Length: 542
Image (cartoon, rainbow, N blue to C red; front, side, top):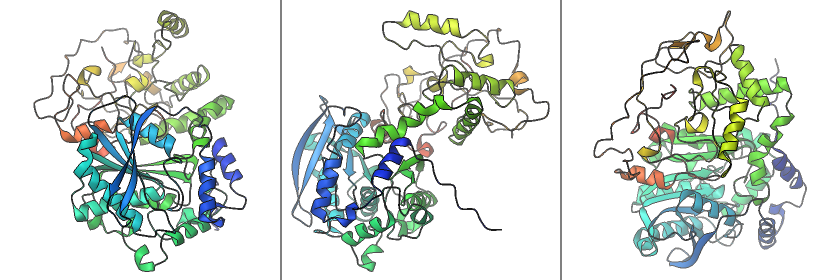
């Protein structure tokens, strides 16, 4: 039997339009470097779809390195003084293009969202300066942060490195150099669709060789500008994927982000797998419907991320059922099995609420999704609540109906899906100790089951048992549970005032993400429930 070719990905409208606009020659790699740089600068010079946040910035000249000095831009959230954690950001654009202007919006969002100072080196570009000049310049800046950064309010004890594309390549190289040379205490690494190997034979290289913005022959050209020496290309500071697990062991936790329609997708995900095999905590995320550079590009970036939501109302009833099933299964893959809000930015009222209700009635949900009644407009709180009261009746949420706390306010995960932020003060959310749960059909004891399950003969859905209670008893009050005790001294859980007593928590808290597509998110392996926090529960609050 002949294998069928993989189904082509469906790009978001903005990504598809951008890919189509860049699918015709002349391509960037066919232009002289100086002309290509002007083209990239012009493409990024237009007004972004969202006004970038205000920041304070300064330029410094860092002495040292192969060229004698490096110009560095330091960006802080506007009006914020004092010592801040640091993100050393290494820009992409093929080692040939890119500068502070092309990445301005991205750097601003990262600084404001993470509450950090972003240090942005303008390293020397290829082909005028070939490997390893840029890598060594970045190392010089990292050492400067450690040795001189305190004088400019930079906390070298809370230092992360991040980069996109070839910047992700050099970020990975910097972690390997820090391990080998010492002296740079990197706490986290964020790699946006990184270049990890000087090879062009992966499945994604063949599948997306042309027509999806970054071309296979384009990457060959970029590598030729960087280095043509096979021995240099094989070094782990040029091709991090060729590092052994022993060389990767002990590197800082990593977030690896890839795009679905990108020639670099497979090698980025392979590097994430190799880091994980070496014992490094890794979060790997693939964004569907996107192309290379979707984080950096100003014109399509916001539309790429949100156009799916805008298109949701066009689905018919059957399409909504299929879409909702897949959506909930994806939540299962993230480990979410507690009741969540039917909205939370994902669903559209009232059609998608009705779809969820219909799935529950047909027994296709293992947990009934709750309604979250909350005021949405400042100054119109009573009107908002009246509207909800007229719309939703007691019992609509089955056993999961609550006055407050469904959805993103109840998930208790490392992210709330809208802005990937997590409250850090113990007084800002109630942690309920876990209670034994009765095993339910189709589940293995001790493991939470999926939100969506396969139909069973005579399936009664949640009408049988939900959380150990039978339908018809939801009007019975439960005894009030005591508040959990304060964490003991030395615990890495935040204290009552939101302060923390463990440096690792300070690092991760400082780099917690912001609204928008950019952010530094702690790895689930290092911040999962049960490792410093009381594990979440999917039982309703009293």
